[in-house]
Length: 74
Image (cartoon, rainbow, N blue to C red; front, side, top):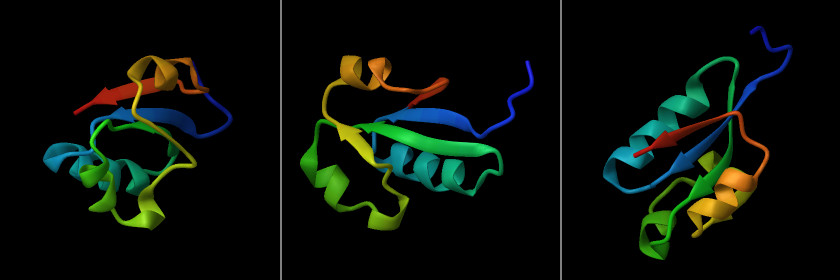
């Protein structure tokens, strides 16, 4: 399948490894992090605000119902 747009990725987890995945996913051409699920507010505060997607939630099921094509679980 060939997409004519960026792959919309949801990221579950923004702790130590999740923060690394967020950075790398934001650097990949053809990839757009459009949703983030992180229940721990302290982890969210540690992330660079420029890397955060518009949709951030603490509920995994909500993220899964958002407009994403793929999920990375960290």
